[in-house]
Amino acid sequence: MDEDIKLTKLANCAGCGAKVGAGVLAKLLSDLPTLHDDDLLVGFDKSDDAAVYRLSDERALVQTLDFFPPIADDPYTFGQIAATNALSDIYAMGGEPKLALNIMCVPKSMPKEAVHEILRGGYEKCAEAGAIICGGHSIYDDEPKYGLSVTGFVNPNNLWKNHGAKVGDVLILTKPIGIGVLTTAHRGELLEQETQDLMIRLMTTLNKSARDILSKFEVHACTDVTGFSFLGHLYEMCSGSSVSAEVNVNGIRLIPEALEFARIGILPEGMYRNRTFAEHAVDVGETELAICDLLFDPQTSGGLLAAVPEKDADAVLQALEGNVPCAQRVGRIVAKRDKAIYLL
Image (cartoon, rainbow, N blue to C red; front, side, top):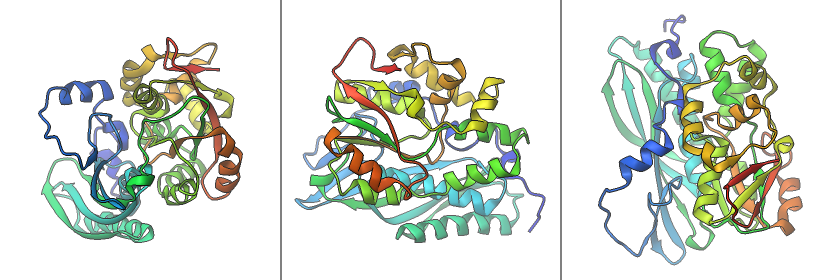
């Protein structure tokens, strides 16, 4: 294989930063006809992470699809990241992934060895999750893209949605923030190797452990923090739950190198889309601009953000500690106010 291939140079944008903005997406979906079915427990009306269809009183099917342009230069690593990100939507619903289908676009000029390595990365990460890739579809395209359609199962009685948060709930996050800024810096060849290794390690860490631990407790609402940013996804949670949130900014683990880059203006395009979507609903208080930028930063394969009862919060954090990249108590749910989110 050509060792000099750099996948990120073949794409105009990277990872979840390529997502259509949440506001634009809502308008695109606003007048589409839908069929009513009592067994469709989750559709796209609440901007949730995956669709859920009830098969029986104790079993429901969870289905999602996610793919994007390269976010890493190494084909195998790109395949791992894309698969980890796609699997995350199943975990965010409290589900367990079982089957997956490859979705791939490749330039005709891409060496077949590189294509094989992308697929190998995806297969190995799915195997780690206990899911089986059993087919897929590929086409030629000028820019490479890869991802998965994933099907899983969940007990309808233990289904997590991105709405349902209750006043008094504690907000818990399982990965640090700043991946979008780091990937932007990486495209500019500005990252030290140690920071690059951290970035890849975070993006290839499954949310399986987070889901397994959280499922032992009561979870009122859950989502994974990905392309719409921490504030964008929290805004959707608050809007769908008819509540507001107070966020303890000092409780959020920001990747130090990402904050440094944000302070000098190295920011992904997706950050501006996320800000346009959600800033009207956020009272930033005295929060530094660069920190706000990170909270609007599109994450690729980010952590789970869960709203849990206050009585369980300490036990949840203790159980998560050491089993997820970082267990953080980042805020609390309060009664609905003028703004959806207040940064403290």
